[in-house]
Length: 443
Image 1 (cartoon, rainbow, N blue to C red):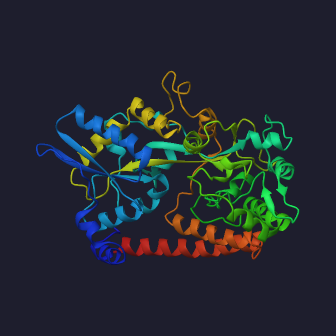
Image 2: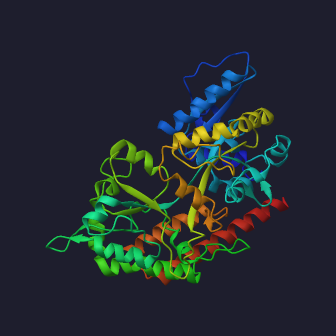
Image 3: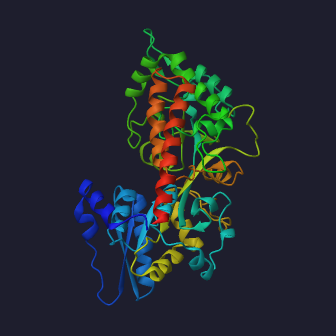
């Protein structure tokens, strides 16, 4: 393993030493006559409730195992600490983009043989799911829920601006035209409303190159931040502070409410469109149930547009068995139980998400509470659905994009300078990670 007890000591010094020894605590009464499996998951709120209900059902349906659900914040860091310290839980819920780092660190048990013996073959998933579960030729996880990014349109705002509510911006040019028609300024020039702005909410600063045919890794796993498609994309992003004024954009942004509140800028009509996943439907249900909206694929550059193959970010939540788990076969028994189609669909319905399975049950889409779910299904099934780049250094890659994007947005960097800065940083990080891995392999 690349995660060692020595590294665990250092991590514990920076975090909480008690985590490795004791882990999180739950109030559940656990039976003394069963094998208890600790399941760490990141979900709280309605998402956590939905999974807890499934866990409770599993505990009722048999009398050998008892799964204890424990909600853990910062789970990707705390789980690695527990594995390094030799005291991991039995099952961990991660994001699929965590898998390369965990797999290369030797922190997970592969599932290929376990999945095959349970009849959980790869052909059960939609095509875009399969690469999210694998790294370097092995399967490390099973998926629980998935989501894709789309463009949400506030129809009331469009109509008030004289835009046909049936209008669907398919290309970047059409999105820019929509912005020009919808944006409102005060008599002093401050922005009061926009058709679209990249920083609302701004969670995926790295994704725009894909909408222009760009990519962030080549086939060898080397960074390609300076790809021509990326240069076009971030040249477009930079056109917004150039056109609207960086200070005015920042002022507008500061007036937008937080995502998970009734003051959300999209719900309030301060922006007419926003890039978000299926989970936005939950927010609309709670805070704006009468909102008129449509969901369409995120626009792309004209040269990239193909109505039969939309481009969109697709990712998912996964469950894994950590290396060092005391009872891996029992852990997989629970994971395999979760993979039943009806149970995955119950979770998808509760989370307002798509099912990751190729075959949905009769009536799944008809009874789904998220009225845009067919759009998300179409995006997830597209041959041009893309996931988070599969590299161990992804956390650094994403952080470099976020930091450099901020400099681009306030006018301090050009698109070329921004991407060059990211490229240099990630080339160095990739070389360092490979060298470190090679050195450990020689020991």
